[in-house]
Structure formats: C-alpha cells, structure tokens
Amino acid sequence: MHRLSDMLRPGVKLLDVAAEADRMTAAFGGSISPIMKNFPFYGHGIGLGFELPRISTTMSMPEDVVEANMVFGVEAFLSLDGVGAAFYEDIVIIGENANELITNSPSMF
Image 1 (cartoon, rainbow, N blue to C red):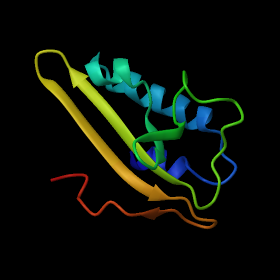
Image 2: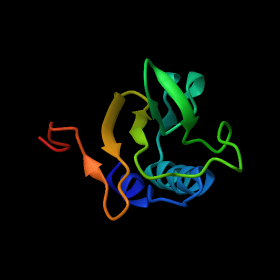
Image 3: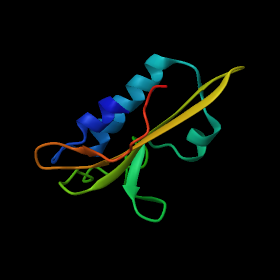
Image 4: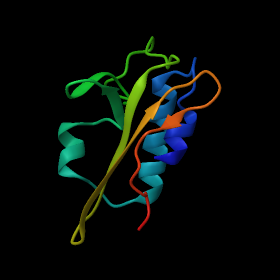
C-alpha cells in the first residue's frame, strides 16, 4: 500500500497505479481473494462507500487522473489457499508536494 500511495501524485493515471498493483499482487502469488473477485480494485475515492474514481485495471477509465486534494482509500486483499486472507487499507489526501497519510494505525504489528 505504501508503494501505491507514493505513486498517487497529481497528474498520474490511475491505470498506471493499478498496473503496478497487479504486478505486485502477481509477485506475491497466492490466490484471488473472494472479495477481490467482487471488488477488483486497489483503492477508491472516499465518500459514502466505494466512490469513484477507482484504482483498477478493469474499472478505471483512461482519463482517470490523480488530482491534488483528492482523498483515496488505498487497499489490498491478499489470499493464500489453506491459510486465509488479509485486507489492509490506508487513507491518503493527495497534496501538491506530498501526500498526507491520515490512517493512524500501524501497517505492521
């Protein structure tokens, strides 16, 4: 999530971020989690739910570009057969010069 959050900078296409997420997920291996089958994205705008735009190679549009002051939930759903699944999400505000992480729980325990 940290890598994807760092990629979310003004002017970046969400399809490019999604392609990196697909690459990283494939490198992890494992299986496709049931939630990822239903929600095939790595992040979304923040509002009342899974708001547009989405970070996805199947759901993002070519014109979906990161803009300053957007707020994203950046997430992953990873799964290993016989072990289970793990879900993680960070919330970031896109800044002109740097992003602000507003999630205050640690990513590693």
